[in-house]
Image (cartoon, rainbow, N blue to C red; front, side):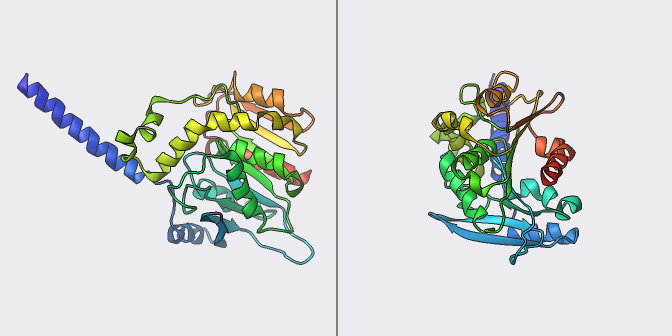
Amino acid sequence: MTIILRIISVLASLFFVALLTFTGCMTFRTSDQKVLKTFEKEDVAVQIKRIPFEDREIRYVESGMRVWDTISPPMIIFVHGAPGSEDNFHKYLKDSALLNYFQMASLDRPGYGYSGYGKSVPSIEAQAQAVKAVINQFPNSKPILVGHSYGGPIIAKCAMDFPERLAAIVMLAPVNDPETEKIFWYAYFAKWGITRWMLSKALRVSGDEKFAHPDELRKIQDEWSKMNIPIIHIHGMKDKQLAPSKGNIVFSKTHINPDILNMIVIDKTGHMIPWSDYDIVKQELLKLLMK
């Protein structure tokens, strides 16, 4: 029995050390230096900007050429999920076909990356205002907003609050429905004081958003039907995180005006649409340009 207890004790210690190492490394952010090196390798011009927003700065990465006089290029702004950061969309910002037509930017949402890292902002409205602060840096453009997962309802809130500043929104596997959102057991590690300290700041912020999200979605539930700009919703039927068949797909179809909604359902796709279905997302962005 003593030997068994020692083995269990050793295994538990190893698991604990592995957990600390794993979660501590999951910062979900890329330094300015690494961002610049990433784009330099592919000979893509990029700028890293910081702007003041409430109690912090918002960092965003911008690629493409600005034209400030009489003509401004079409604009795309990318908004990541939880957890995540601006680097989630580097592939798009480096894409030569997109760069031929678009100016692009990707931001660290408040609480993530280098936008007040670790200081949670669970409010969807406040997150939308942070996106607006970035939009305001491009006064000659009406951008397309692209949001993944938790970024979906954030860009939808932008379309609800200031549609005149936008051309369209593209939601990728968005978490829209407050009644079917899942909370997995490991999310409680960010909630319990005894385990919260083990997690990286990005995972803590993600946990804070997770538990606040259903109530935040209920606050905007009646506003979906008022949106009046083009909306693309791309979702996968293999999305195990979001119960798409009974939740978010139905929610969008029920709450968004069908005249402005383009629903794209992909049978064999899961939650990671920005990466797993890159070509589909890219083609939809180019189609919006043609329109």
